[in-house]
Image 1 (tube, rainbow, N blue to C red):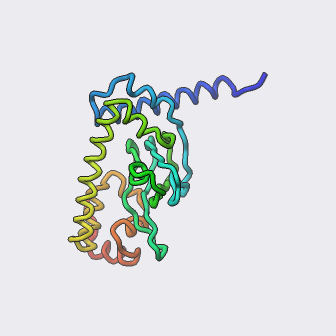
Image 2: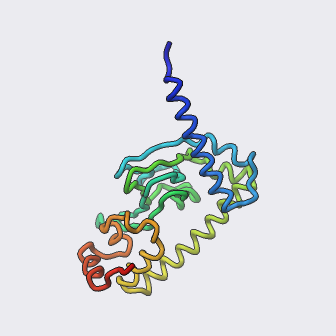
Image 3: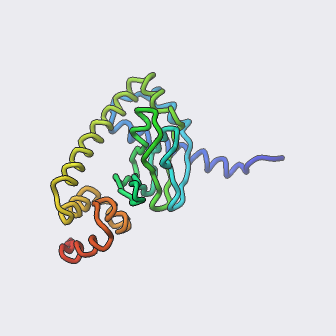
Length: 211
């Protein structure tokens, strides 16, 4: 008799069900009108795990990848012509991440998504989101709300980068990512606010964080 032990199958099914329920709760927070029938296709999303340092999406990928973070921490990062990394943002539990421009324009991705700690996520097949948007009003509402939020966040991020000095950018990072800031390596914080690790060390000495 072959096949996986019954206990393993049960545990896997239970984990998949819990992952779906976590995603469904997230989706309904953003799109309260989503129906059970509209959410049903999400049951086919695969539960996956990424070790620290592993990529959920790489620069140069020809397909658009979307992932829902169940537990863990990831960064979204660009790499400049000089090889220097510029961190775009961070995401943790209950966040939908994707190579956004590649998703919308069907172009090669110039953004990578990398785990900064062991991360469990729902992997959505390439093309799944556009297909669901085409077929279901609830998915259109979900993505529209998330897109609005992304544009507002991007505008505030651009304002900070253009108008604030490095110390203020660091304080903004601490405010915006208060829940996960202690988990983000300082080298990644430096890449996010656009300074060297040495410059960040000086900022932290001059502007100590108080509880």
